[in-house]
Amino acid sequence: MANQDGAEIDLSEGEWLPQPRGARTMIFQKDVDPTSVSPESYALAIELRALAQRVGTSLNAYARRVNWDRSTISRYLSGVLVPPADFVERLILDGDRHLGVELTVDARTLVHRLQREALRAASPTSADIQDLRDELAEAERHSGLLQQETRLLRDMLKAAHSQLDEQEVQIRAIERSAAADRLTQRAELAVWSTNYEGLRSERDRLQSLLDKLKHELVEAERRAATAEERCAALERQLEAAEEAEDEEWEELERRTQGPVSSSASSNSPTFSAPYKANDDTDLQAVVLELERQDPVGQRMASILVAAMDRVIDGPRTGRFHLGQISALERSSLHAITANLIQHEFGFPDGHPTDFLVAGIQVRYRFSTLQGWGIPASALNQVCLLVEVGEEGRHWNMGIVRATPEHLGSYGNRDGKRHLSATGVSAVRWLHREAMLPISVMADLPAATLENITCHKNAQVRVDNLFRSIQGRPIDRQTIVALARSAIHGERRARESRARLVPEGILVLTLRDDQLISDLQLPALGPSQWLSIRLVRMQPDHGSTPSTLLAGERWCAARLQDPIEELPMRRY
Image (cartoon, rainbow, N blue to C red; front, side, top):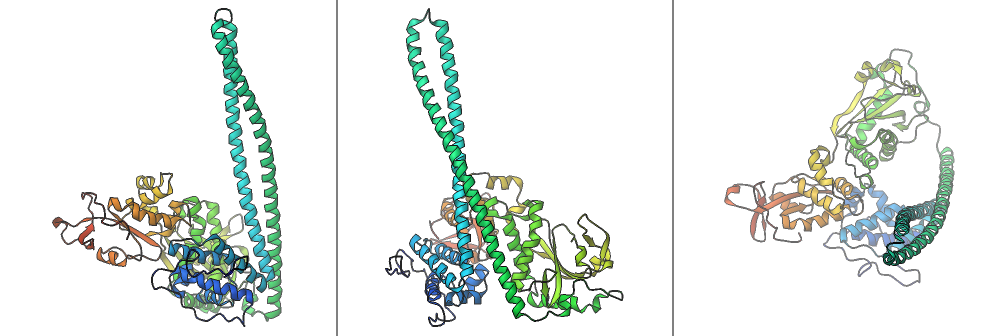
């Protein structure tokens, strides 16, 4: 890799890119062929491969970790496709997290520059859009700084006003006292006069400072307004560019696609005879396709978890489960899950429905309130129904055709109708009461929850989490919500491992499989943590599972057992 001056930068060792610990390396499916890709893509692919070796895992394992298609990542690493900027940033962060050392600013800047050059060589339109996104992000960051400066100046202005008022009160008090005692206390008058002059000078200085702060506040507000206008203009420009790109793709699809099948082009089919589910071949085709792609519902469950995590937004809001979000945020889950389903299963766009499943027009309806609103435009169409429990503990999915006999008699103000009793019984359920993972915080007593979350310091909150919840797996989303940071959440957990050693608390991850096995603790997933307090094994512990630490047997502590410091600082 070369820097901006043309000098070669070695990303394989040293302060740029520390060698991964252990023997875990990533094996690539194909080599980078400089003759079949552009020079920009070739240069980017070489650096991405160097970065990929930092994550310390195989290509298959990494693809599962980041929830990306394995073949797509392989194309990124072979130069066939240009990865998006967020993939490059994620690859860098995963390497930093695995090695415990951040990539230097120069190396990070160089990799992103290569990605921009490769993107511009492959698709100038996409590169322009990416540049606009970057410019918008920078403008929003600058706007945020100006807003912060404005708030600081307002606080300083308020403090100056307060000091000025205090000085005025003292001056008036001195003037009244001096006028009353002028004839009888001449000696004290000289002292008061000195103080009076000093206070007047201080008042004048504060008045000058106040005028200056007022001027700076006006200027800061002007710059903040200019920044907001710049953000709005960039957003409009970005929307126009994206719309133009969408129109190009639609034109390309019209040129390359043939006529749509009759089943896909029908808006609202009608039935001359009474509807019979067993004779509905379209509905059966949709059911078979969904069962083929996701027989046990694992992919759909992952979609629902990802959508809920996006709305709960733990790192920014500190929330842990679906029961804490507002009704407005709940309504956004419909669009989010629809987009994720279409992307995950590769369903084409429907016209006028949501998407095509096995070539059949399908309406998608989502609910968290035990009922789906069916619009009039969906009459007689096949509907995919998905429901998540109010707290996000379980989910259901079924297929039904929205015939008149399956809908209730009365609609709401939007003209939507709910399924009748006949309609509910006609639903072809693919999954019923399927469980979803939920944060351990959702079931905690109020006092325990308050003890964990009350502290202002993020590290103390994570420490309290491991003190209060022991013997149960804790997912990454819970930790980053407590830490209020998606980047530093797991670092807080790693720091807790050392901080809790004096209290005898062992904090474990998937890598500590031997300790987990010895102590017969619940198995952990890739992004889960678990804590347990240990003590030296005594005769009255009986056959309690134990493990060997520093030549001694240790086991899970009982409530009455005293606190003992673990015999190691790092593990």
